[in-house]
Length: 239
Image (cartoon, rainbow, N blue to C red; front, side, top):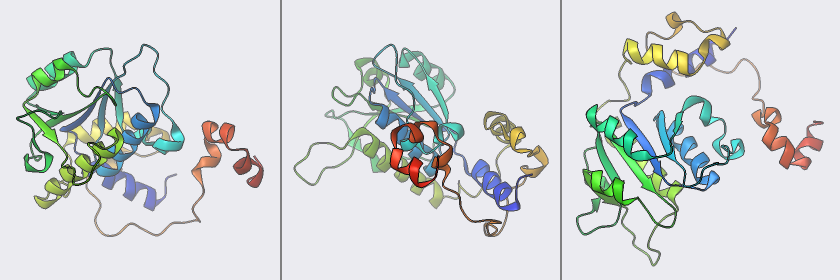
Protein backbone atom coordinates (compact mmCIF):
# COMPACT_ATOMS: atom_id res chain seq x y z
CA UNK A 1 0.00 0.00 0.00
CA UNK A 2 1.29 3.51 -0.76
CA UNK A 3 2.22 5.67 2.20
CA UNK A 4 0.42 8.92 2.98
CA UNK A 5 3.56 10.75 1.85
CA UNK A 6 3.53 8.96 -1.51
CA UNK A 7 -0.17 9.66 -2.08
CA UNK A 8 0.31 13.32 -1.15
CA UNK A 9 3.25 13.77 -3.49
CA UNK A 10 1.65 12.04 -6.48
CA UNK A 11 -1.64 13.88 -6.02
CA UNK A 12 0.06 17.26 -5.63
CA UNK A 13 2.16 16.68 -8.75
CA UNK A 14 -0.88 15.54 -10.73
CA UNK A 15 -2.83 18.69 -9.87
CA UNK A 16 0.11 20.95 -10.72
CA UNK A 17 0.70 19.45 -14.18
CA UNK A 18 0.44 22.07 -16.93
CA UNK A 19 -0.71 19.90 -19.82
CA UNK A 20 -1.36 22.86 -22.13
CA UNK A 21 2.40 23.43 -22.48
CA UNK A 22 4.12 21.06 -24.90
CA UNK A 23 7.88 20.86 -25.37
CA UNK A 24 8.93 19.79 -28.87
CA UNK A 25 12.41 18.74 -30.01
CA UNK A 26 12.88 19.26 -33.73
CA UNK A 27 15.59 16.95 -35.14
CA UNK A 28 17.48 16.85 -31.84
CA UNK A 29 19.84 13.89 -31.88
CA UNK A 30 21.73 13.80 -28.57
CA UNK A 31 20.41 11.21 -26.11
CA UNK A 32 21.72 13.28 -23.20
CA UNK A 33 19.78 16.35 -24.33
CA UNK A 34 16.53 14.42 -24.69
CA UNK A 35 16.96 12.83 -21.27
CA UNK A 36 17.80 16.17 -19.63
CA UNK A 37 14.77 17.85 -21.23
CA UNK A 38 12.49 15.10 -19.89
CA UNK A 39 13.92 15.57 -16.41
CA UNK A 40 13.43 19.34 -16.47
CA UNK A 41 9.94 19.06 -17.96
CA UNK A 42 8.87 16.87 -15.05
CA UNK A 43 10.55 19.12 -12.49
CA UNK A 44 8.95 22.28 -13.89
CA UNK A 45 5.48 20.71 -14.07
CA UNK A 46 5.11 19.94 -17.79
CA UNK A 47 3.96 16.52 -18.90
CA UNK A 48 4.25 16.39 -22.69
CA UNK A 49 7.33 16.16 -24.93
CA UNK A 50 7.38 15.51 -28.67
CA UNK A 51 10.65 14.32 -30.18
CA UNK A 52 11.46 14.12 -33.89
CA UNK A 53 15.00 12.64 -33.90
CA UNK A 54 17.28 13.31 -36.86
CA UNK A 55 18.03 9.62 -37.45
CA UNK A 56 15.92 6.54 -37.97
CA UNK A 57 16.96 4.55 -34.89
CA UNK A 58 17.19 6.93 -31.93
CA UNK A 59 18.99 5.88 -28.78
CA UNK A 60 16.98 5.14 -25.68
CA UNK A 61 16.45 7.61 -22.86
CA UNK A 62 19.40 7.58 -20.47
CA UNK A 63 17.90 6.93 -16.99
CA UNK A 64 21.05 8.19 -15.29
CA UNK A 65 20.28 11.62 -16.76
CA UNK A 66 16.48 11.52 -16.80
CA UNK A 67 16.22 10.13 -13.24
CA UNK A 68 13.06 8.27 -14.16
CA UNK A 69 11.22 11.30 -15.60
CA UNK A 70 10.20 9.23 -18.64
CA UNK A 71 7.57 7.56 -16.45
CA UNK A 72 5.94 10.86 -15.55
CA UNK A 73 6.31 12.72 -18.86
CA UNK A 74 4.48 11.57 -21.97
CA UNK A 75 7.14 11.23 -24.68
CA UNK A 76 5.83 11.03 -28.24
CA UNK A 77 8.44 10.04 -30.84
CA UNK A 78 7.59 11.03 -34.42
CA UNK A 79 9.31 10.89 -37.79
CA UNK A 80 8.14 14.36 -38.80
CA UNK A 81 7.21 17.08 -36.35
CA UNK A 82 5.01 19.07 -38.72
CA UNK A 83 1.84 16.92 -38.43
CA UNK A 84 2.02 17.10 -34.63
CA UNK A 85 2.38 20.88 -34.72
CA UNK A 86 -0.51 21.16 -37.18
CA UNK A 87 -2.75 19.06 -34.92
CA UNK A 88 -1.87 21.09 -31.84
CA UNK A 89 -2.49 24.36 -33.67
CA UNK A 90 -5.96 23.09 -34.59
CA UNK A 91 -6.52 22.46 -30.87
CA UNK A 92 -5.77 26.11 -30.09
CA UNK A 93 -2.06 26.04 -29.31
CA UNK A 94 0.36 28.69 -30.49
CA UNK A 95 3.84 27.67 -31.65
CA UNK A 96 7.06 29.30 -30.44
CA UNK A 97 10.30 28.38 -32.21
CA UNK A 98 13.70 29.04 -30.70
CA UNK A 99 15.05 30.62 -33.85
CA UNK A 100 17.28 33.66 -34.14
CA UNK A 101 15.67 35.82 -36.81
CA UNK A 102 15.18 39.53 -37.32
CA UNK A 103 11.70 39.38 -35.81
CA UNK A 104 12.74 37.15 -32.89
CA UNK A 105 11.72 38.38 -29.42
CA UNK A 106 13.11 37.88 -25.93
CA UNK A 107 11.49 34.67 -24.62
CA UNK A 108 10.48 36.46 -21.42
CA UNK A 109 8.17 38.87 -23.27
CA UNK A 110 5.65 36.24 -24.38
CA UNK A 111 2.51 35.47 -22.40
CA UNK A 112 3.19 31.89 -21.38
CA UNK A 113 -0.11 31.55 -19.53
CA UNK A 114 -1.69 30.61 -22.85
CA UNK A 115 -1.42 27.15 -24.49
CA UNK A 116 1.95 26.94 -26.26
CA UNK A 117 4.14 24.45 -28.07
CA UNK A 118 7.78 25.44 -27.51
CA UNK A 119 10.08 24.05 -30.19
CA UNK A 120 13.82 23.60 -29.71
CA UNK A 121 15.84 22.76 -32.80
CA UNK A 122 18.80 20.61 -33.74
CA UNK A 123 22.01 21.15 -31.76
CA UNK A 124 23.81 22.54 -34.82
CA UNK A 125 21.21 23.59 -37.40
CA UNK A 126 18.43 24.86 -35.16
CA UNK A 127 14.75 24.52 -36.04
CA UNK A 128 13.77 23.19 -39.45
CA UNK A 129 12.40 25.55 -42.08
CA UNK A 130 8.98 23.91 -41.80
CA UNK A 131 8.85 24.67 -38.06
CA UNK A 132 9.97 28.27 -38.53
CA UNK A 133 7.30 28.81 -41.19
CA UNK A 134 4.60 27.51 -38.82
CA UNK A 135 5.75 29.50 -35.79
CA UNK A 136 3.57 32.21 -34.29
CA UNK A 137 6.65 33.59 -32.55
CA UNK A 138 10.41 33.24 -32.85
CA UNK A 139 12.12 33.54 -29.49
CA UNK A 140 15.69 33.90 -28.30
CA UNK A 141 17.56 33.84 -24.99
CA UNK A 142 19.67 37.00 -24.55
CA UNK A 143 23.42 36.40 -24.35
CA UNK A 144 25.47 38.87 -22.28
CA UNK A 145 28.82 37.17 -22.87
CA UNK A 146 30.91 36.00 -25.81
CA UNK A 147 29.10 32.73 -26.52
CA UNK A 148 26.23 32.88 -28.99
CA UNK A 149 23.97 30.23 -27.54
CA UNK A 150 23.31 27.73 -24.77
CA UNK A 151 23.23 23.96 -25.00
CA UNK A 152 19.72 22.91 -26.00
CA UNK A 153 18.92 21.19 -22.72
CA UNK A 154 20.03 24.28 -20.79
CA UNK A 155 18.06 26.62 -23.07
CA UNK A 156 15.01 24.42 -22.61
CA UNK A 157 15.42 24.47 -18.83
CA UNK A 158 15.73 28.26 -18.69
CA UNK A 159 12.65 28.65 -20.89
CA UNK A 160 10.57 26.15 -18.94
CA UNK A 161 11.27 27.88 -15.65
CA UNK A 162 10.24 31.24 -17.09
CA UNK A 163 6.98 29.62 -18.18
CA UNK A 164 6.60 28.19 -14.68
CA UNK A 165 7.33 31.60 -13.10
CA UNK A 166 4.63 33.35 -15.14
CA UNK A 167 2.08 30.67 -14.43
CA UNK A 168 2.84 30.57 -10.72
CA UNK A 169 2.35 34.33 -10.53
CA UNK A 170 -1.25 34.00 -11.71
CA UNK A 171 -1.98 30.92 -9.58
CA UNK A 172 -2.07 28.27 -12.30
CA UNK A 173 -0.10 25.82 -10.14
CA UNK A 174 -2.62 26.17 -7.30
CA UNK A 175 -5.71 24.94 -9.12
CA UNK A 176 -7.55 21.64 -8.88
CA UNK A 177 -7.01 19.56 -12.01
CA UNK A 178 -10.01 18.72 -14.15
CA UNK A 179 -11.60 15.28 -13.89
CA UNK A 180 -10.30 14.60 -17.41
CA UNK A 181 -6.72 15.35 -16.35
CA UNK A 182 -6.97 13.21 -13.21
CA UNK A 183 -8.25 10.24 -15.22
CA UNK A 184 -5.67 10.76 -17.97
CA UNK A 185 -2.67 10.88 -15.64
CA UNK A 186 -3.99 8.07 -13.46
CA UNK A 187 -3.89 5.87 -16.56
CA UNK A 188 -0.72 7.33 -18.07
CA UNK A 189 1.27 7.01 -14.84
CA UNK A 190 -0.06 3.46 -14.22
CA UNK A 191 -1.08 4.40 -10.70
CA UNK A 192 -3.24 1.32 -10.36
CA UNK A 193 0.07 -0.57 -10.10
CA UNK A 194 0.82 1.44 -6.94
CA UNK A 195 -2.60 0.51 -5.51
CA UNK A 196 -3.84 4.09 -5.74
CA UNK A 197 -7.47 4.77 -6.58
CA UNK A 198 -9.07 7.74 -8.28
CA UNK A 199 -10.65 8.63 -4.94
CA UNK A 200 -7.12 9.27 -3.62
CA UNK A 201 -6.57 11.89 -6.30
CA UNK A 202 -9.73 13.87 -7.02
CA UNK A 203 -8.92 16.64 -4.56
CA UNK A 204 -5.67 18.57 -4.41
CA UNK A 205 -3.90 17.75 -1.11
CA UNK A 206 -3.54 20.47 1.50
CA UNK A 207 -0.75 21.16 3.95
CA UNK A 208 2.92 20.13 3.89
CA UNK A 209 4.28 16.83 2.62
CA UNK A 210 4.03 14.20 5.42
CA UNK A 211 7.37 12.98 6.82
CA UNK A 212 8.87 9.79 5.35
CA UNK A 213 8.07 6.47 7.01
CA UNK A 214 11.59 5.15 6.34
CA UNK A 215 15.00 6.49 5.26
CA UNK A 216 15.51 7.43 1.63
CA UNK A 217 16.78 4.65 -0.64
CA UNK A 218 19.06 5.36 -3.58
CA UNK A 219 16.87 4.44 -6.55
CA UNK A 220 19.90 3.92 -8.77
CA UNK A 221 20.33 0.47 -7.22
CA UNK A 222 17.36 -0.69 -9.31
CA UNK A 223 18.49 0.97 -12.55
CA UNK A 224 19.92 -1.57 -15.07
CA UNK A 225 21.73 1.15 -17.04
CA UNK A 226 23.44 2.48 -13.93
CA UNK A 227 24.48 -0.98 -12.74
CA UNK A 228 25.98 -1.80 -16.14
CA UNK A 229 28.10 1.35 -16.30
CA UNK A 230 29.13 1.98 -12.69
CA UNK A 231 30.96 -1.01 -11.24
CA UNK A 232 32.18 0.97 -8.23
CA UNK A 233 28.59 1.69 -7.24
CA UNK A 234 27.75 -2.00 -7.70
CA UNK A 235 30.59 -3.12 -5.42
CA UNK A 236 29.79 -0.54 -2.76
CA UNK A 237 26.16 -1.68 -2.67
CA UNK A 238 26.90 -5.40 -3.09
CA UNK A 239 25.06 -5.57 -6.42
